[in-house]
Image 1: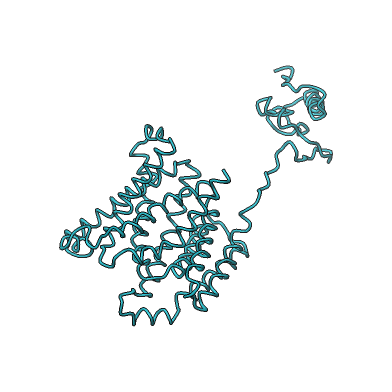
Image 2: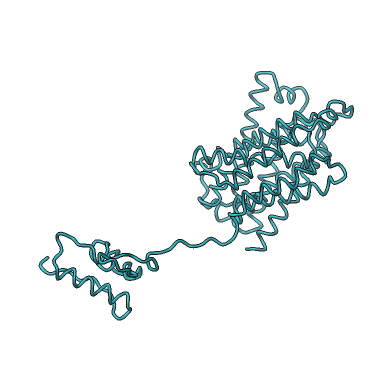
Length: 388
């Protein structure tokens, strides 16, 4: 279990660190964005998810699969991921890997905001400070004048830095919602992660195919470009490298979320930032050099209380209760369960609680029975009051 968690976490960190560079270096600028994401989600992710099910021998869940349940669980997250993947693909083509990974952490701000709005969960002071650092770090990187001016004067078609920042911020906001839904399905509903990845890929491709069809009918956007050229315009053998890496990344994210939850995923992304910083060590400006340790500090402040052993809540068997005379007495939870929840007295209340309908003899027998149970000298059994 621990070895699996470490393996998937390390794999996700490597994938996050190299993915932006793979897309910017191997994907041609002539590739139609929607076509690339459809191939990535509808073909590669579905094939990889089904192959993973076959490899692990978990094909039995396919017999109980139903379309109604599948669309209910994966329909909305797939729509969000379709939009997010489209925005992310465009952002990769306009940003370097380290800048993208740092700006992308702004999704934690959206996550905290949504949790506060919909769940009413308040933040601790450590988490507030962490979000403040993330906001400062995001502004520090997104307002880099050197990168802004370099992208405007780039004659090699290196992309627009401002455009990449905008798409990254929008994708991060959507990711905050989608990741919460996915974590709920994987951990609360016990959805198989490989099956979930295949479902997300298939439905995302269907949504994007409908988008292309509408654009082709109305005569604008990627749909019009596909009509004028072809669906695979600009594709080469190298184009499949970043698409396959992103498709594998979706499956890896599912495994990390399954084993470690959202906290483990966050720390895997943090390791990805560190790895990306190592790859771009020669190109790091003072802004990025300051942003890396700040984002590490922000992660530590936000998630440090989420790791480590959790203390189990106290049970009624070891929590003292006060009697009507002010004395503390330990009640036996096992005795209560054996008596169908009645405990040491009828009705499941304290044995010393006075009831207007109970006789003095009945209350006396209940006290004696509770004393004998707590001392372990007799076996508790339910005694029916006389006269009933």
